Length: 156
Image (cartoon, rainbow, N blue to C red; front, side, top):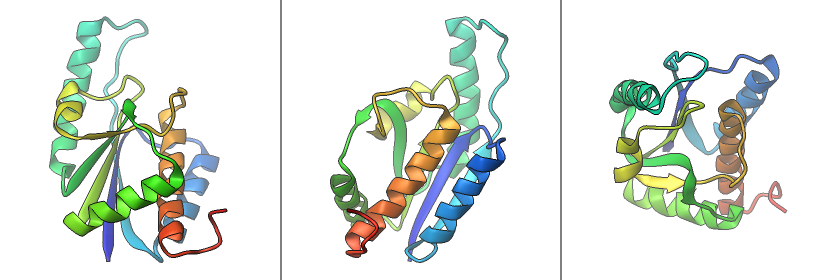
């Protein structure tokens, strides 16, 4: 069975986001094993300097390292964008080479450049969204990718 890890810096606080996540995790069980890992976001003051942000991202990177398994896909605005069908093709082809795919979603300040340099970058949109909402978008697109692969009627 396919294995998908989703590593998120920050946690879901709103009940409706948590319920949406649970719904997609339930749907995904039919196609793959999904594990969501929530890592604590570094605390910064109201107006942090670039240096303070960089240090916080480096500390978050250290927390992420133990979860880097299989093919690493970093969610970043500067990444490659796909249509849902092309993303489905990309995801399924990636499973031909890797038994596990790990998606990384950073904090509100993003991710350390160290993660972005050596891994595939995926952009879900050029628009800016809260990271907890992007988690739901990602789970929906992973679900959609599997329904496309399996010729289910979900994707129209």
